Image 1: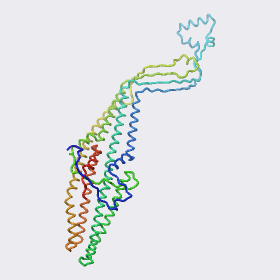
Image 2 (image 1 turned 90 degrees about the vertical axis):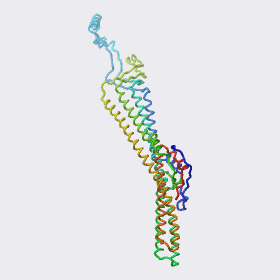
Image 3 (image 1 turned 180 degrees about the vertical axis):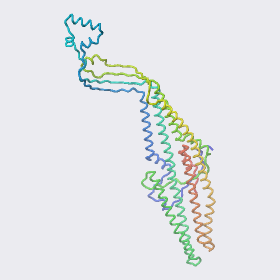
Image 4 (image 1 turned 135 degrees about the vertical axis):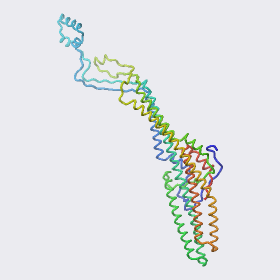
Length: 474
């Protein structure tokens, strides 16, 4: 049978008394409850914020290909103005040129001090202010930019799959809380029925005692059993209220939540291989490991890129010029190409490349182990679901026997052929069978919800419940 195929069937709610269904409770279907968890749960909201954070960081990594442009302004105070003197020029000349200048100076009676006094030029003042726009544009980085973008993309995918895993976990939690309340409602209804049955038995015994047909001890036995049934009913009511508190807090409601979707079972399940194949193909935990592998591979490329030279374009444009000779002679703009070749690096490139390769190997082993663990989990959960179905169906004849036994014991008691203890035992046995069937149905629903969660088929739960659901007999 293909996965997702549905069966014709129906489900009904368990009849509730006024003590169970009160006007101050809010009935919620399982579908509406799941939508409420998805939209209002703080844990899921935190994971969605983490996805947004990773996506923003990925957008930031995409900007690495753009040039970096900056405006700078600098103020400098010099110990003295920068000047150029003729004597400094003469000293910087070669010996032959300096001799010619000195000969000319003697011929025209001009000494170096006079030249310095007449022709000294000030290049800059003591206070220097400069401002410019500088741009650097990387055009080759050895693949490091692409690797950084791959790593950022892998982190976004990891965050997205982590959110999916959290949603699956919350789905399982909701199924436990929601159908846990439904099961406690079944148990409470069972206890109410037992209490009413033993009350009727006690009243019957009281009349028989008054008529002298039974001994006092028989009436006391009936009374004690009725009182104990009342205590058990009160305890079941408290258990239901405790389960309601957990469900109400999960749904963030102001009044106690009561399920409108009852416990259900199915006539059969798809083959186990269908769930295993779906799980190994769609489980977000495996996808998250794939994202981690992508990050580790990107880290390998990034570390290998450190062995390649960097090539970049750069440019500079002056925005402000002082009224000095140096400022007037300096160019307004400059552009060029730069190459940075790493000859020796102290960041441990080779070790980091090996570490990145080890990370990839680690992820490969983790994924292989995760696949085996998931297969075991699916098989275990699938068999638990089948066991719950077998238990539920197998107790059907026991329930019929228990009901017939109660009827016969009551009739025999009225005729003096049975004791009060026999009637009480029959009532309690019937209650135990009903409770056991409710627990089996609850275990089946929990196992089914886990199977659908890990296989990525949460949306199919409604089909199993609405179209395949079979009434839980109580």
